[in-house]
Image (cartoon, rainbow, N blue to C red; front, side):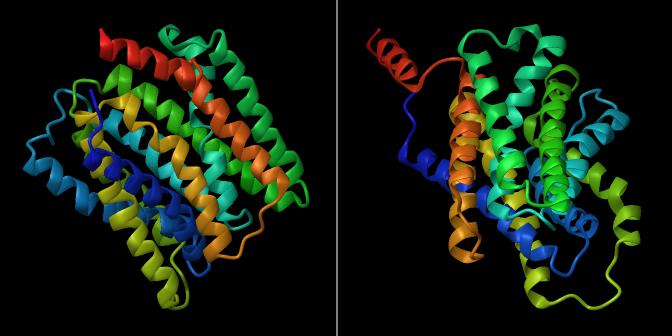
Length: 302
């Protein structure tokens, strides 16, 4: 199926939005705790996604337990969002965007024990190794200057592991639900579960307008509207084309961080970006881009 100009616009728009999320998080943690940034982001996203799911008649759980959706919410949203925000207190937004792109690497690694259909062999295994080298480059060389930076980077990598685990939970335990319904329930359960942590981390002084505005945009646009766009693409052009976003968003994160937040760009940053994004692509696709284009051309002509 050919991807229309509208769908390409949605893909690029979604990549630009998700790439900007790390910049908004970086601004938000200037005055707000990581827990508050994460909770506000999730709560605002729930306000967007729940009405969308209800309007599309996709809010039904179809037999999936609330407890499972709560666990999924903590693994795929609440936990990772807190970890990323905490990591960005010491790590640049551009590096955070690159490290999160390691999610397909963890998916490939976990598949060895969890899902044999997606286990790593051949080029997929090469991709995993390249990506892990990229993570080591960023953590060991680009963030090796201080213990705080290294810990922050490790938190962000741990968030990527949470995303990967959440993906397997959705596939094996929540496949009966509509994707938009899953997203809405994940945000709703996470909002409730993280509320005590957010209250405990509430600021003692009135935060500045900039951080508050950044978190508002992060929640409504960067999470709520972005997830709605994501699932529209999933249902119209399919998962394979939609996940192109995974490889575009880190580049946007670097551009925003360097251009708008005056973050540094080192040779190690570029090397880590290339290794992680390239390795993630191979780990997820199991083939080179040129091979994929050739196969697509054969399918179209056949």
